[in-house]
Every structure is written in C-alpha cells, then in structure tokens.
Length: 302
Image (cartoon, rainbow, N blue to C red; front, top):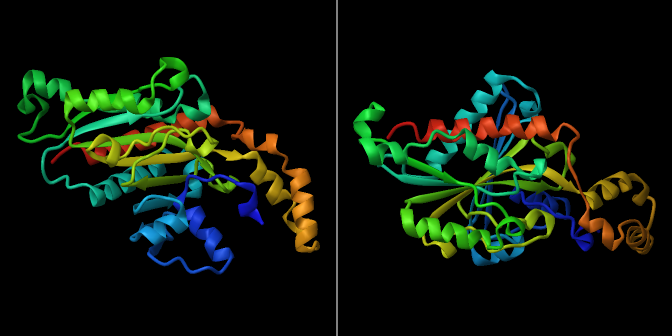
C-alpha cells in the first residue's frame, strides 16, 4: 500500500527494504551487509549494476554505501571520531587517493533553515588547502604531496536566482577539480534513521529531491567530473508518520478498506509537510563536525 502514497526517501537502503517486504527479487542489484557489533555500526552496500536494476530502484547505476549507527545521536566525541574514520575509509574505496587530487566540496542546502544547513556547516569546518598550496607550495604544508581541497556553498535558487548546478558548473570550469563531493541533508523513510544514518554514493546528489523540489542533478553526467554524494537524513515525510501510526489498524482491514482509509488520512496537502527532530540544531551541528572530520582524514595525506 505504501508505494501508492509516494512516501519519499533518499536512502537506497530503504528502497531495497520495500522490495524485501513485498518479497520481490531485484535483478541487477547486489546487496552486501556487515555489522560491527563492538561499535554497533551496520554497513550496507547496495550496487546497482544494470539499467533494469536502476529502473526498479528508481536510482542511477552506481554504489550506495549506508552506515547505520544509533549512537550517532549521543554527543560522544570518541564515537563520532570512529564514524569519521569509517567515512574516510569508504571514501578511499570510491576514490583513488594514492595520487594527488584537487577536491571541490560543495555544501548544498539553505543555511538559513536548520534542517537543511548540513552541507554549508560541513564546508565551514573543512581544512581548505588549495589556496595555500597555490601560494606557497606543498612543502609549507609539511609534505611532498598533498590533496588540494576547496569548498563552496552555492545556496538555493530562492537566494541566488540561479540553479545550483549552474553555479557549480562555473566553479568546476574555473578550478578544474578531479572530484566533486556534494554534501546534503536527506529525507528518510524511517524516523529511527534521522541523524543516525550516513549515505555515501558515487552517483552524486539531486538537490531538493527528498522534499519533492527536484533540481538539476549534481552528477558526473552534468559536471563531466567524478561526483561523490554524502548525505544524512534530517527530515521525514509527514505521510510516513501517519502511515506508520496506522499500521496496526490497517492489519484488520481488507485491501479496499485500507485504500479508502489511507486516501482519507493521507490527504494531498500532507505530502508538502516534513518533520524534523526538536533538537535538530544541535544534531546538525554535531553531524557536520563528524562529516567534515571524515573528509579531513581522507584528504590529509596522499
């Protein structure tokens, strides 16, 4: 029933769960799971290998790595540092960091809206090196080889009057990075994944997709350079909460009654509403440090 009500999610993992619930085999999609009991971190790698798999998943072909860590909600610096190292590890698996790279980090989102400010906050905490290396050389940074990192916060169309992609294309054209890393807040299907899940993908990001405001995709096809997308869910569709709350009641209704009930409860205007945790300001701030530290670790040396 859920698919009839367009409950949104940006997480590839949650899309595969829907197919599991319906006992549908997805051809062309490979799923690998690993659980670290000591640190309570579950890692799921979803690889969409064929066009049919991409069509079934509703996502581009590529690799989607999801880290689920319930303790991310706890303000434990040591634990968050472990997650940062895990992020760096997975970035190394998607990028060839054995050679010097020029890396452009893009903080997507509206920094005036707390739940959408993850990207801008991550960029503000990054260790930028491109300008120093260009001015003084790598030896002044303490090494013979070093990745060149730079960052930009392009804002949103309501603030700039321009598509985010247009701004990034201009910067990419001028700076010629080897890779673009786009950071954005995402929408989740499950409330338990809010600020406790991190998705890393080599397919890029479509700004605003989680809240139904689709913009041009920040991806390799549009930028002509490799793009890594990193996101953390900070909002959930209000319709999801209604659906989950009614789940037990729906079990006693037949399919026709379920349809009628949900059509009444999940009205069209509800799909424009999204819910975020009450402590989202502190949560986003903490997660921005975790992500930025992961990037700093990944690019600190060649």
